[in-house]
Amino acid sequence: MTTAIHQNTETNPWEAQAARFDFAARKLNLDEGLWRILSQPSREITVHIPVQMDNGHLEVFTGYRVQHSMARGPAKGGLRYSPDVNLDEVRALAAWMTWKCAVVNIPFGGAKGGIICDPKKMSMSELERMTRRYTAELIEFIGPEKDVPAPDVNTNEQVMAWMMDTYSMHMRQTVTAVVTGKPVNIGGSRGRREATGRGVTIVANQAMKKLGMDPAATRVVVQGFGNVGSHAARLMNEVGYKIVGIAEWDGGLYNKNGIDIEDLWEYRERNGTIHGFPGAEKYDSSELLITDCDVLVPAATENVITTHNADKIKAKVIVEGANGPTTAAADDILADKGIFVIPDILANAGGVTTSYFEWVQDRQGYFWKEAVVNEQLKDIMESAFDDVIRYSETHEVNNRIAAYMLAIDRVAYTIRQRGIYA
Ligand code: GLU
Image (cartoon, rainbow, N blue to C red; front, side):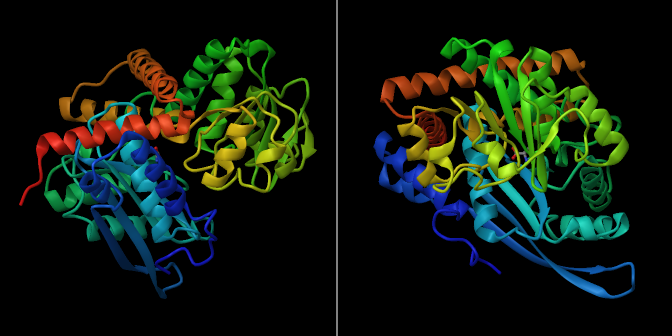
């Protein structure tokens, strides 16, 4: 299962990434050699890891770590657990990390990891053994100065704690800076958990200012209520946005007067699900994407906005909390409709930016107050937003291509400066 056999051209994330990269590189007149370098990941590692299951039988899981670029610093990027993981997806996510770190101008390259597994069907101890064995297999490829993993879909602070511990056992000393997104008491950063959702809110606010929209009169639909979507909904609600819809993979909620997000959080805490929440009506998730609203926040996975639904979208603004939620073919439809898209490599960069703060704090051994973290995050996200808008206006391209152009420009500049080691 090395390539995306189940995916057609439109929904193959690596092709989606390549289509935007090629377009932006052409606009930049990128040198052909640099083009060749950046259109392939620099390293792809596949591991087949044996794991003893609770019932005594041995299972073998396939995992990947793709390091797309290390030109601007250690590779950086999350690790996801899902039955849908495949090499083309991990490649695309790794490249997106390179571009994302360059857009917010932090000193990292890009990487991503994934293990093909169904974490919902695994016990905690099975997940722990799988995580530790995966970490051990990658021992010489990761490290604070090499490649720094973080949480992604279906991984969390606990998984990062196991990775940090496994790496530290091999090094015979505690090395907190090997991963980010750790629990706060073992080297995690205050504010990291909410950071991606906070970044989404910051760039949404910037878009409101630019477009002359008032958050208090703005109806938002959030797709996905995981770490990114739930925090984005909560923080946007605090600013005054009206969250009218929440779409989960197995059904959604709608309330035209706005959903009380604090109540919904409490309800989910008590019941383990958002379904059955009395403060909203049950609604079909795919309908929610095309329902009447002002801002749409896809905050789950890839390929949610495609040629099948893009022309029906009514939102004026799309803020991509997820990685790759829009296909390359759908980009053109959204552009024709005049929708203001804040692309993933800008909109969801709040997570990795706060990961950068975590890595810095771990290496300093000095931990910042949450207010300091949030202030620095706001600063970086607002400058990145302005940089992308400037590129879009100067080069007369949409925001996504502008973000790619800005990122490619920065990465290419560094490669030229460093030169090619022969
Ligand atoms: N998985 C997150 C992302 O896609 C965070 C990566 C990180 O913090 O390194 O941006």
